[in-house]
Length: 173
Image (tube, rainbow, N blue to C red; front, side, top):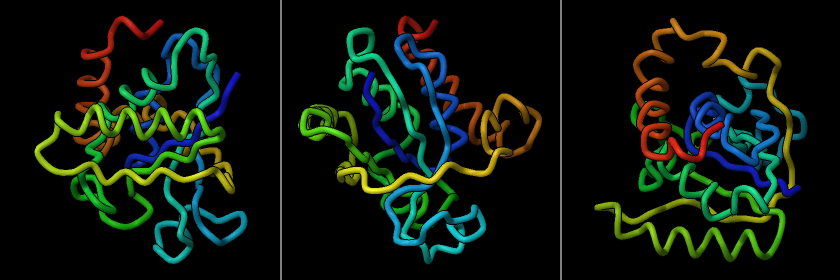
């Protein structure tokens, strides 16, 4: 099993897009990339911790490759938006990949290069080694699944999930 940490805006969307993929055993929302230990959601949203909203993904590379996992990740958010996703603005919404091995770093760079032609603007996804990960508060776990009638979930998350699952339907259990 391997672990990689991915951030692409609100972690509710990325979590739901990755959950259910064949070969993915765990997806945990949290915070990574900043300087404050054990930050809270409110602190991260305050834009002074340096952390991004992320998900820690545990997966079996013999079932789903890092490349395929990253292709799904790039479908569920816009990697060309710097420090934002739509109306969600701030460095905690940045597009980022925190890798746990040199092979993941190489795969990340390769996927970004290969997918660059699919976007009008340049991909601005950060690729960095994982230095820290802090689990988000329990109410963020499975947020989309547990709150489908939340207006943000209906208007922002649901369309991204629908698009991602339609494009990669063969990859889901």
